[in-house]
Length: 363
Ligand SMILES: [Zn+2]
Image (cartoon, rainbow, N blue to C red; front, side, top):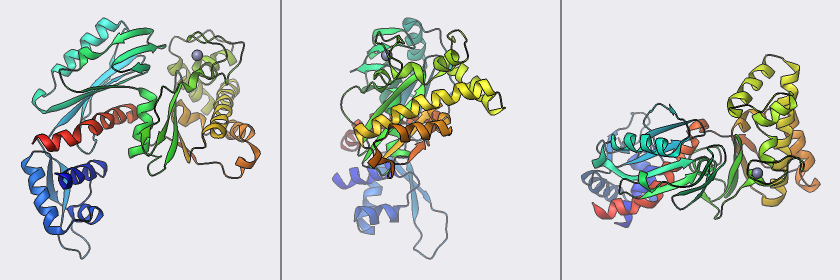
């Protein structure tokens, strides 16, 4: 049982691994790896396909998810759209189109529940939800961009284990396990969409507690934030900040507006460039402050953050905010490797973490 769980976890964490390599890394003999794979195959969890030949080693196989194996249903909700997809062992997401939504919780949850019921129920082992919100248990406590307060998502559980997580925190989990922060003991991930969210990861797991980095007052103390506080970092790093720099009214969709400003900046418009560079500086100032506070070994930036990171004003602001001893040894600050799939990949990982043991024990 323990060896079977070890093999399943290893194959899940290392898609494309060969049986020979997994056996070597797990310290198993070739004979016991063959026997354990036989059990995992019979349990409908893993399968094997011939490895591409090459090299002089003995022929081996690649461990893949069983074709009728368990799936995690993944719900990704953003301020403007939702999508429902599945992830198999190994973490790969099935392609699924996004659907625009009106924002009314009853309608959004009804439509998502209908999409979940259309998935192959006999293969589903858990449901994982990513939301742009502060989450407690399965409840959305506050989602500023959706304007939701205290919305219970347990209706999406289908009677299966249900995990609900904050989108930026889940993107951080994805970067730590499968992306740019992989292999680092302490990582900081920040996603900038409308405002900024993030998480500190310790050995791939989120540090406990709701980290509301966007509502730390790294911003202008005179500016009110929709959260109710003044001076929040949130409103200085996104499309709302760019609109203020450009003397434009608050945009209806700040994320879309930011993309338009970045495109205009790329085509050489000086005012757009100045607005983007100013948001990049505000982002860098806060990142520098968080380096002082948290001392991560790597920082990953997703969403708009991956674009703002390229502006010289970003790195200049990081350096100015960092304590002088730290400037000589700043950690790498990298664009998120998983891009817009980060929250969904992280949601699937959070669910798999809770069910792999049970899947082996049950079958
Ligand atoms: Zn705030």
